[in-house]
Image 1 (cartoon, helix red, strand yellow):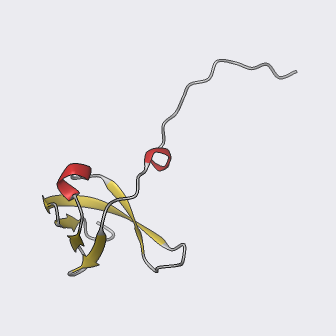
Image 2 (tube, one colour):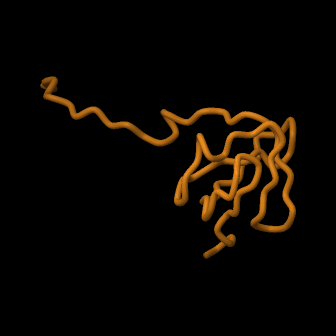
Length: 81
């Protein structure tokens, strides 16, 4: 017979994720320029972010923030690095 035991609460990144403000434009593979964004308030190096690749589709790319330059500019780690 199964008995309920004590459980340990787990907080996962996907459970606490938030949609960011503004829109993004890639300058190259790693440099992102934001319009209406607040990168310095919402991101820090080594944060993981998800980017919608194709509007309307459910294609999402996981990326790691390497450097936050300003509220409107950030650098991602090289893909595969």
